[in-house]
Amino acid sequence: MPEKSEDAHGTPATADTRSMGEKVRDQLRGAAGDKEPAGTEGESDSGGGAATSPPPAETAAGGAAKPAVTPDDIIGGPAEVGRSAPSADAQPAAEPSAASGEVMADVSAGMDASWDVGEKGVVAEDLTRRLEDASADEEIRRRLDSVREWEEKEEAAKQEKDLQRKEIEREYEQRRKDERHGKWKRNAMVVGGLLVIVLVAALLSFSVSMNLPSTAESFPFISTYDVRMPQGTPVEFANIPVTVSGTGEKVIVSIAGGLGTELQVGDQITFSDPRRVNIRIFGITLLETDYQVIAEFRGYIPQTQQNDFYVAVMTTDPLPGWAVDVILPDNVEAYPVNAEIV
Image (spheres, rainbow, N blue to C red):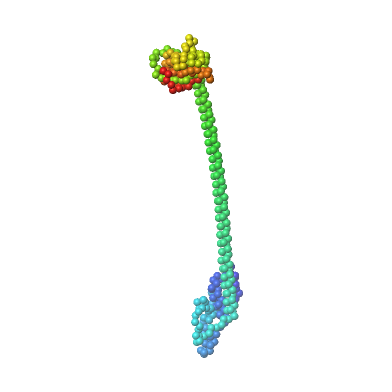
């Protein structure tokens, strides 16, 4: 804020709002007015009379007038540097007074002080800007760290959710597997139970009817077996008991408790005349055919004490192996052979 001052009459002056250049020019003009120009007296003496000087101008405030500024009082600026030296006829410039030197020193000090203040202001602005930039960088780093921390938390939460989802899916899959396994076990048990029931019912309802009357005259299907019959023990062929006695090359064969028939090696005998067999299960007929059984004596086996016979089972229809076993005895050894005895 500019300071208030008083003029030469003690009257308080108004606030000085002039620029620095205007102040310097006014100070230079005031310093030049304190000293009278050197060429004034010479001109007065040579002219023979006193030269009339212009009346001093009054200030706007009504105070004392400031003397006019001569060309000698003007300080050359940067544009004057480098000009050629004045000629010999030119009048030498008056040396500046002590007051002018003081004014110039004050101006220089003021300009230095103004330059220092400006430079300090620039430095202060630069420091302020740097501090603001550093603060902004720190804020950015803080926000980036906060965003990074948030992203890490989000990633961790996502991974945790994925783990939970996989665990739930694994438990669900295991539960479904257990349920399927349990259902399979239950179904297997149910099916097994049904099969057992069916088999038991089949066994209970299975029936074989043999020695039924037959009207067949030919038996195109023949199955031949090697049968080894025990000595003196009756065995049944299609529910017909047959007993073989004797050793060596001759044996006695008794059929159904009748009189025995003597056989030598190679002789044949009919164990069963033409008859019909009927096999049923659950009351349904599975198989029905006419049959006839013929045997041929093969000799005596001393090692096992058995009599060896080839037995031919002749039928009107083809029979599976299990149906032929129904006709043959249960307590003898029987092996299928590829032989023709009839």
